[in-house]
Length: 79
Ligand SMILES: [Zn+2]
Image (cartoon, rainbow, N blue to C red; front, top):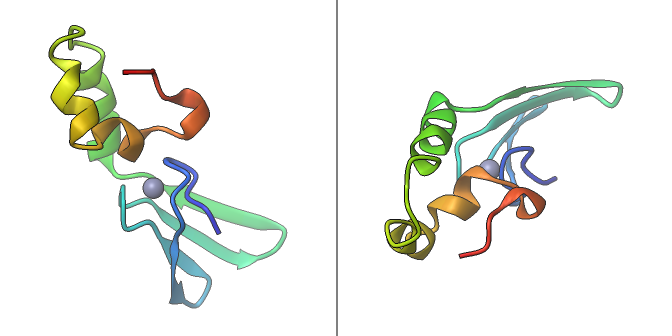
């Protein structure tokens, strides 16, 4: 199962819970018909911070993997 936030593979925690080790998103999937997704507040704050960075400031942003940790592949901006 993939993460709703960053598309990384989630780890099963049991009882219908899945956790993403890359971004920390928690997904509860108790039944096939519904699920709940809880994204860490830090993801939203990093997205806000990323929007303030200029092109040169974004180099370490990509190098450290922050962009891939807070966006799905189709949402990421190219370096
Ligand atoms: Zn994730």
